[in-house]
Length: 187
Length: 281
Image: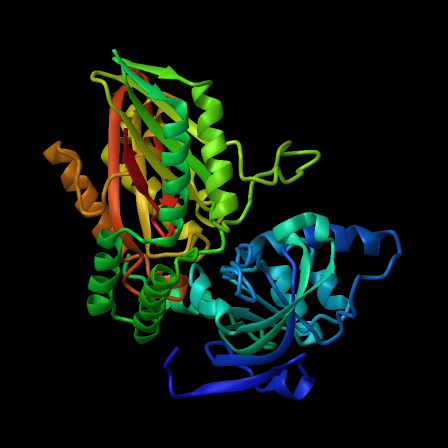
């Protein structure tokens, strides 16, 4: 992204940061984020259902929906673009209730997720689907956290510097995907 | 009769797996660049710029364009004069996929039992193989890995003959609009019309292996491809689904004879990483 108005934000998130984010804002995220996609979400959700703790402290954290390729020798990570977020919708309100404050992925979310973002002040960031090689350049460190047996679906902690994303859903419940499509629809 | 050792097939498949995941076909890149010139949304132009930068970076570093290196779809046309030696052909194709995905640092995205166990097979096998026997003594292979963000947004509808062209147009546009940002637009729209249920789905997937920019040889279908492309780019979905006028790069239709009572129609969307590599033995 070469847009002049980029908001540089820190992860984990703070209430102060979240309040200043609006649908359509360009952001660059620096700090650390956790990865989790379908299978990891299912396991975390089931663990909570059994009254167990999550494998990491989710409060104020951002979860990135990604399953990276293996890193080539000499690289920190492989290609690591966003996966379709909608598949996590079933689990997301619960994660937000647990204190998660941000998500990075691609695609629309359902109304329950939007409501949870409003109620608990969480934001959903869109990353560019398929821009996996470019995005990987902003990932500077990787640590295995849990569910290593899930391979690409394991939970990892990424250290990121200027990770590029766009605010897709803000705490007012505005949805930048729906707004964008409506603006350019000519049928 | 010409003898071909199946090890040659395995090697060709392995190389195609890697090449297709690292190198975006030039034609697709050219279409993305053309889209950047015509895109009406400023954000859409930026998104296309990032997608182009991503393809160039992946090529330079020989790394996957996208982390979802897909299920591996292999189309193999076998000349009927060929006699395979050295083992089982199908096993050789799977071995080629395993080698390509392991040595190429590609993601292993295949799970065995889809419903209960969902355990990763660890080497991206099995491949999905479409084999045909054709005249001649050559073996032609197309490898087209397909990610699930786009595959999940495909649809099939058993239209009625009375639905006609309008029914096809309505169904295709509905599928593209419902898919929104999920299949990573700008997409290539693969459409299979006719045959029966499974033939329509197969034709839709096969149409995606057509080099971008080529049209159906039948002028009526070509005209429909052009019309659907124009309409797809009016859905507003745009690059990455964030709004704009570049929703599709191409629409490819394949058709087949069908039953007097049917008009099956399948739509298979491909992401902007329209991966494809081929080899001839």
